[in-house]
Length: 192
Image (cartoon, rainbow, N blue to C red; front, side, top):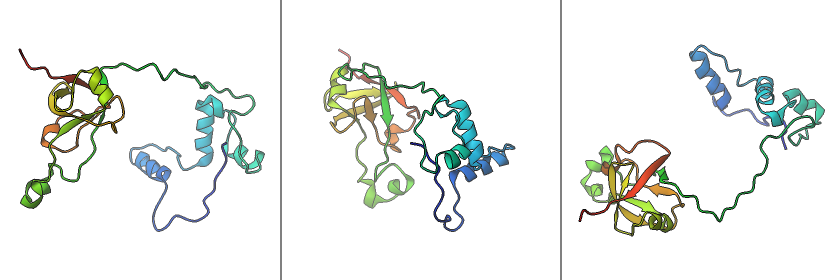
């Protein structure tokens, strides 16, 4: 259901909506987004999104008596329908979603220069779901190569989502890992 919503209270202090902030940035760059004009925004949405064709600010305010409307309205099309998928078929890929959470004690300047906390920095490991580890034939304590250049010890963690690799942010060993959504994770095999 789509309906018009009006603010009940004014914003406190000098706070403004994201739309106003974006418009200020655009203005500084020589453009006008008109992002704070509801009629301009709803007109743009109804123009580019087929399911919202014909839905304007005036339509939401006057034609629906304020109760809103279920999209798509009559005459509009909904190009995206529900497409069932068989979730029992595993997705096989050589790419893993990279997660780099911050840790309480990282390799920041404060930690490095404070002897009382420097020893609290945990060793850097690559956390993998056990099912993912099995697909690349690694076990807890083995080594993996992440993003083709960074070697880490594996720590199996069932709490990590399948298809993901977790390495901590802002550590000596993780510097230089590219800020990309997906990376390769390969087993490191000892030369025989």
